[in-house]
Length: 225
Image 1 (tube, rainbow, N blue to C red):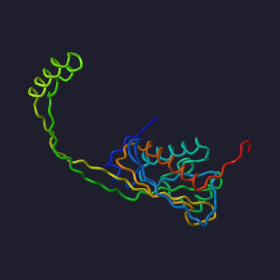
Image 2 (cartoon, rainbow, N blue to C red; image 1 turned 30 degrees about the vertical axis):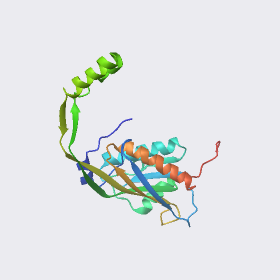
Image 3 (cartoon, rainbow, N blue to C red; image 1 turned 180 degrees about the vertical axis):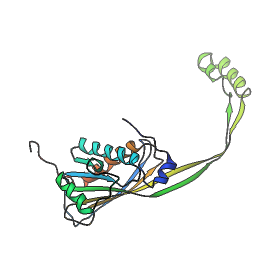
């Protein structure tokens, strides 16, 4: 999988931000409009990020995940020029011509930083080194010989205290469907210590798809049609 390393400072300046590596937690809190019973069959993914180098891998990865799971999807860069401002009606017309019945929009909501202090830690270096003799050299010669040579021959090492910084990126997702000006579905997203755009998008797409299934938002076309 081709990945694009995110430099945190650049992402902050871009005010557009993408979610996390496989090791970084992604939290998704969702709400579905109970008054709207619509289902979707093809969705356009539109991350409203300022940097195309973040936007492109994000939407491409999400589109790939959705398509692989059976939900038709297309990225906005496939039919819109990111350097041009389009009227809403023009975007709707382009979506209609592609058979798109829903638009999933992502926006950046800010960043939170948390600092934690790790206190100094002391430990014995080289002590108890003869314990291996207990297993291989017999109880008396191994255990006591190892204890004396290891414990008393060891030294105390101390690691200095230091600060760590944890970064949480906040995004908002909204799903709009034809015939309604209000969002059918919304998602509040938090990602801890993100590194790679595509890995973040992959995790998020899976979480969103699972939630849409649970909410009965996906309309599948029977095979053969």
